[in-house]
Image (tube, rainbow, N blue to C red):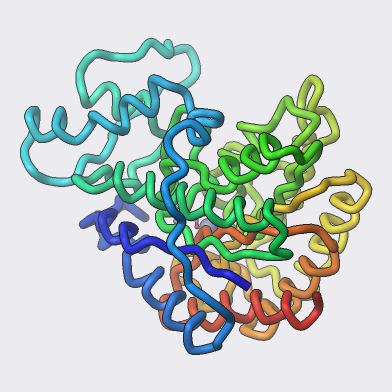
Length: 343
Ligand code: OKP
Ligand code: ZN
C-alpha cells in the first residue's frame, strides 16, 4: 500500500482551543501525524509518497468560493486588527438571527465557523491546502488502480462543510477525495466515517445527493459534540433521500455495540453499489482517548480494517481524529494491517 503525506501539516500548530470551559493546548497537534508516520514506517507497510499539487480546482468542487477566499486572506486581516496571535471565533448566528456575511474579520470568523476549538493560525491555509492535496494524491492512486491507499491527512476534515470550519477541520479532505472519484469517472461513491464524532461536514455536503452515500458511526449527538447533527433519523434529503445512514451510539460503547453498527453500515454500502470507497478514519473511539467516551481496544482496530476490506471496493483511507497520542500509531496501523490481512 501507499501512504500519502506532506510535512506541511506542521504549519497548523495552534496554541490553544476552548474546551470544557478552559483554553487548553490544542489536542489536534503536529505530533499526531509524526507518530502515525513513524508507526507506518516501522510496520513496513509500504512507501511514503508526497502528493504532488492537484491545485485548487478539486477543492473548489466542494467548498464555496467566498469561504476559500476567506481562508486565504483571514490571517493578515486578523493580525492587522488584533496582533500576531491565533484567531478564534467567539459567537454565532442562532435561531432568529441572520446569515449576512459581516465585513470585519471578527464577524467573518464567526460567519465561516461553528465552534471555538479550531484556531486559525499563520500557517492554517498552507497546512489545510496540503492536507487536501494528500487526500487528492491518495484518490489519484486509487483511481489509477491501487486497491487501497492511506492519506495521512492533518488537519482533519470531516467537520468542515462547504462554507464553514470547526472541530479542528477547515477543508473536508474526505469529501474532496470522494468528489475526485466522481470526477474521475466513478458513478457512485461511498463514504464511511468511523471517527468517534459525527461527520457533520461530510453529511451536509452530500445530504441532497444520490451519487454519494454517507454512513457514520459515532457518539450520539444527544450527548456528544458536534451535538446538532448525526441522529438516526437523518437519512438524506431531496434526491439524496436514503443515501445517508447514521449510527449514533451511547457513551461507553465497546466493541460489541460498535461491531453491530459497523456490520449494518457495511451492509448498506454493499447494496448502494459504489465503485469507490472513502473511509474517514478517526481512532478517537479508543478507550483512552482524552476527549472521547467509547471503549475500543487496540485489537478492535484490526477488526475495523478487516470489515472495511470486506466491502471489497477500491478504498482511500483518510486520517481524521484520534488524540491518545501514545496509542495513535498503533491504532491506525492496526486498521491498515487489519485491512491488508483481510484483502
Ligand atoms: C475532531 B475530530 C469535547 C469538546 C470537543 C471538538 C472536538 C473535535 C473533534 N468536550 N471539541 O472529529 O476528531
Ligand atoms: Zn473525532
